Every structure is written in structure tokens, then in C-alpha cells.
Image (cartoon, rainbow, N blue to C red; front, side, top):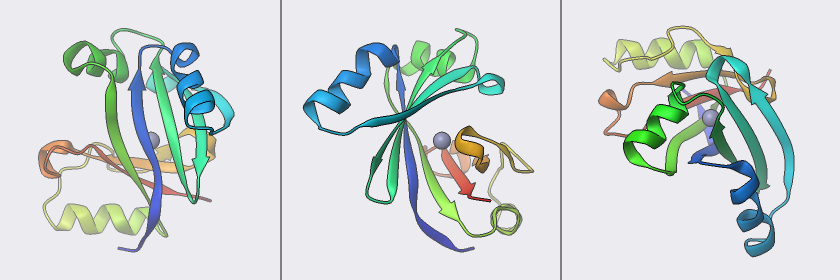
Length: 134
Ligand code: ZN
């Protein structure tokens, strides 16, 4: 498995509109993209800091994954995403080492990346994502 850097950190928020000004006006970052990912029932806003991005996630459906997360645990850190060189190999290696996968096969995430999640049951509570830039 070849992780190259932290691709992004996912943060669940009630509202992009309300949270973006903190990142822009207080932290001085710039929101460079807002994108809806329909199959995840979220709207995302992206900021870049070095090689890493912050991904704010606003739910578009209370029954979607982010909607349910916020209902249960409130706003805050949601997942950690690692950039990998070969996502297919990384998933197979993780599975062979006994890690439970949420996504057995990569799917398309925001920004056209191939992504897949590992189950937090197997990763000490951290929802872990692999991303490969195609
Ligand atoms: Zn993510």
C-alpha cells in the first residue's frame, strides 16, 4: 500500500453558507469549489492548504450519511482521506489484513477522484477514505 499524503479531511457541518466564512474570513483560506455529490446526499466545499484539502460536508437529506452523522454526533470531524497510488491494490491489501471495507470497489467521489471507505469499526473509530487521482 502506498499512501502519499493526507488528501483531505472531511468535516460535517449544518450549513456551508454559515461555516465557509470561518474558513475564509478567520483562517484566510479560499473556498475554490462547491460541488454536490448526489449519491452521497451532500454538498461539499473545498479549501486547499498545502497538499491537503479541507472538505466541508453539508447534508442534502436528513437520512443521508452526513445527515445521520450530525443527528447522532453533531457537527465536526467526519473522516480522514489518504491519497494512494493504486486504490484497487490498497483496498485488497486492507481487506487481506482483516479490515472491513465499506466500499469493496472504488467509486467516483467529489473532484472526479476514485474513492473508497474503510469501516471505522476496523480503524479505531476513524472513518478512513482512500483517494486516487486518475
Ligand atoms: Zn472525503
